[in-house]
Image 1: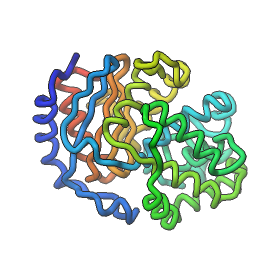
Image 2 (image 1 turned 90 degrees about the vertical axis):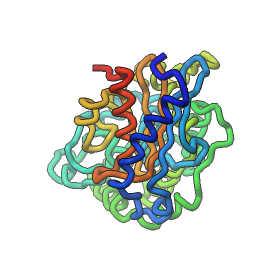
Image 3 (image 1 turned 120 degrees about the horizontal axis):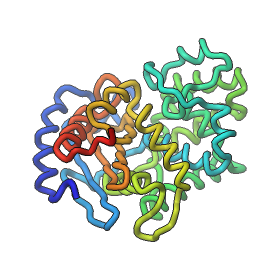
Image 4 (image 1 turned 180 degrees about the vertical axis):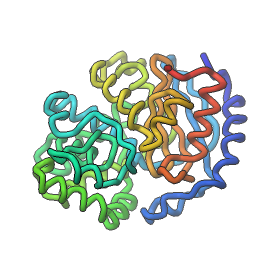
Length: 309
């Protein structure tokens, strides 16, 4: 077992916390702008049930872009890889996560991957259901099963804050609708997508999701295959190649584990076959990743040789 105690984690958090001074919270979403930039916490969930942690791990955080991995898993289970990847690509992009530039130069105007906003919006539009509520309910059902918490919900304040300020995402939706990549009403999709991003949990639950992906979709407690092995593999591959926005290449070299970040400051990591990681550090770097969270993962990866490469 790489990390043996909470004390070891506490020392790493203490070291990484120094970097919070260099970041800033995502204040362009008003509900996220009130976070304390100096917060930093981590939970590591092992498949044998042991959990190590440091910091305020019970604090609720919204998933934001971390939800993209789970919605991708759901639509791959719903519709199969062929259907999904006809509509969204598999390639990394060096552009910011909310960029529209590549869409304007591609023919057809298919988003490059499911981890950028344009791709995630197309993926979310594929979630099956006869209403927005049913589709959100199906995503929540999967997340509740992965976290083993049937009470998980989305934060109405965060969802409304995002819905009211999502001008660029609406622009992406209208562009994609013009090119038949999205078929539904834009406001219905934005309602679903902002609520998806606003689903809340703590670091322990985030680490448990990471562990499910690390164990190829199997819940070690129930022995249930929650996500098929091949779909868990696809999701982990996207986490490596695109999960940390346009810093994914550097992250792969320095840290080398599948991970997905969100602008709330969350990072979900999946060390293949070993454990899941949940991090919360709301001070972000210029690419939208938790600045201290990345440093913490770098320290962890070096000390315990976690890189998969």
